[in-house]
Length: 63
Length: 467
Image (cartoon, rainbow over all chains, first blue to last red; front, side, top):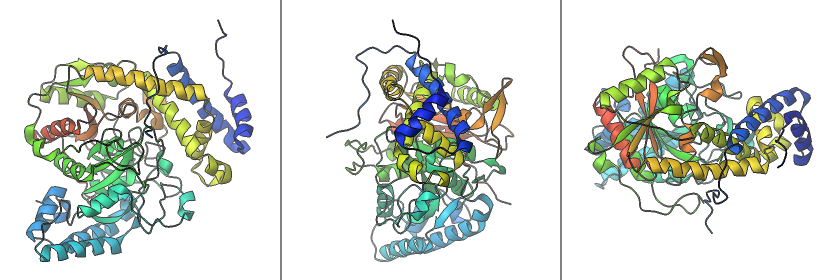
């Protein structure tokens, strides 16, 4: 049994800023962190719902 | 028919032009004059294409003079949200950044099809930057104002399209809808709006926002107009990878069939919660007037909305990543910060949201085995005042921007066709939209019910008289 996921939005934003090559000005950072936290809440609601392994994403790409 | 032909419906205007009661040039001129006069008040247009509208009008008049049969939208002026490519204009998508792009050399597919159908393009209309928002406000170009109350929001992101139609500048226009961006402004501005099935209408040569969820469609002042326009726009387009190759659905011949034989239900549960009194009352009046006693519940709608939120921010962030790197200070600050956080969404969150979409779609489609059409409010409230950031709901301060779309997001999430219809409670100065939701590929059913509501006087697109 793994541990319960935790999420630190500020640490995540700091890390991903470098990963993505972004430059977040100091006066923008709090706002970005706030939105990251909101998205984490939404994602938690979705991820808390158990999906069967057979449930696949709906593809729209047709070759 | 109105004394001012421009205030008629699309159907009426096209019929008048066909009969020679008014020329296409007259219609173009009337519309351009109305835009000149009204745009100062509502801030709907970003670019006016007067020369093009007049040129297209003259071609229609010449065609009529030759004795040829005119196409269905001949001589009818319209406008498009400024995320559609228009030959000769950069595609702004509500942004300052895209103003530096070169002018487009071809029209969006929807515009090309409308030109074939005889429409007169009057210009491009303001929108929320990169379509990421429900308010109709824009840090670069100012807020578009609701013609029914200039201190209130139009809703977004197709804000200019709705304002121009409600103010009588044009009888129809095009928007796009990712999470509610056709339905919300239609509801707030008192119009009919059609968000077709995902994959039905081509999005080619329009500036997308969230490819998994983006739809394009018309707003107009009657259900019949939506049907007429929709019937002109269909058809496979290989330029849009999401466009599905299937037979067109001709909706106009059956639109007067009404609700007879259709099983119509009200969406309960989630769609009755977190509503302001006007939304509860509107749905009660609609249910009572239409004799609807059945209620259905879409399971896990709150999670569906959350999943749509995650997909939206992740795909939007990815789409704009280069611009977020190179020109972050040129974005609307609020939208920039949301897109930056969206670009940082872990893959697991995004993929789980996409998988949940499959689950939710299956559950909702099962509901359509027992009902044909489901009704739900477009928004939980009337159009909020411009500049409002929070409002009080059940004693809790909630974000306006977030709350506006709570009822539209779960529906577009799975691509169901919806007609937004404007309902005015007795004595109300503002409308509230109702979503008429049908199974995939059955826009005809939603249009029939919308038309029935209009015929009964339950839904009405009122023109706003600008003072």
